[in-house]
Image (tube, rainbow, N blue to C red):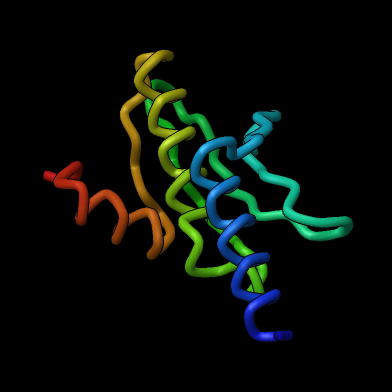
Length: 104
């Protein structure tokens, strides 16, 4: 019974993260409030017409749910809308952009 309840909870949270991520954009930061005191975030710096993605972080208990990918998508949309070239600095951003064919 406990395993079934845990499965249903994870499934419901995973679905919410992909359909309604609730991403907030601040100065140099995209973040998602996951639970009280728990945030996933992506940090960036703007330099001229470049948006440098510096780091991403997702708390361990929330990894594997596509949260970091949602943050990357939000950052990429922002960069496109504002006319910035995205330069991945952190390993996750490099991996994500390579996987999507966005690195030359």
